[in-house]
Length: 173
Ligand code: IMP
Ligand code: MG
Image 1 (cartoon, rainbow, N blue to C red):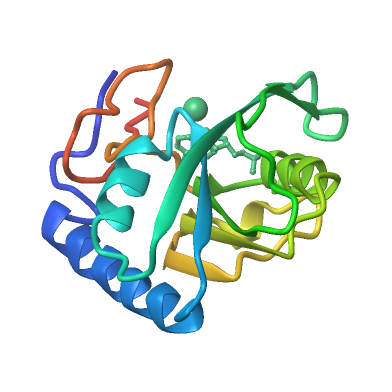
Image 2 (image 1 turned 180 degrees about the horizontal axis):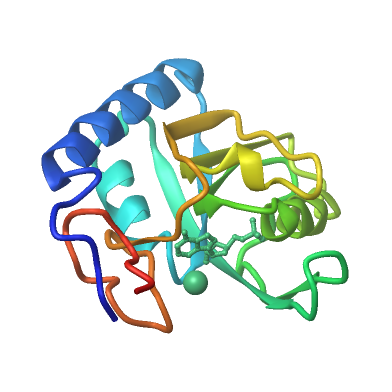
């Protein structure tokens, strides 16, 4: 795996933005309890940093989605791991690492909605809106990116690079 020499977003910039998001979410959910549902595996680092900065009480659960992609137009997504606790009558916030085509988030939102939560919102640390195939907008977005494959802070390339504190662009050469 070859990465760009310098990070496109540094750990410090991520830390600052995560703190801002946490502030915004804490204000929006003041007086309520929040169920965070982190999408495995990419969002675990984001989820662990974000939840420690929230000032509302939270519980944490996970979902996992697998995408079957032949061509860009035939990709379908299936939830392969489900939250342990019921989402019914809860205020649910889904945490995604990155919104790309939007298929994963769309399938997860649909799946969670079937459990009848009181409210449902989506927070994506990174967003590549130019890549969208299905309509999907996050309620909270950390950083908007161009159409480049990025690695680090939980995001992988073939399972590698998740541990990097900064965010890098994958160098395809
Ligand atoms: P989507 O279903 O096309 O929106 O893809 C979302 C998922 O694809 C994310 O949760 C990531 O696991 C993966 N993904 C999309 N873009 C990137 C990227 O630039 N770097 C690493 N993973 C990515
Ligand atoms: Mg991935």
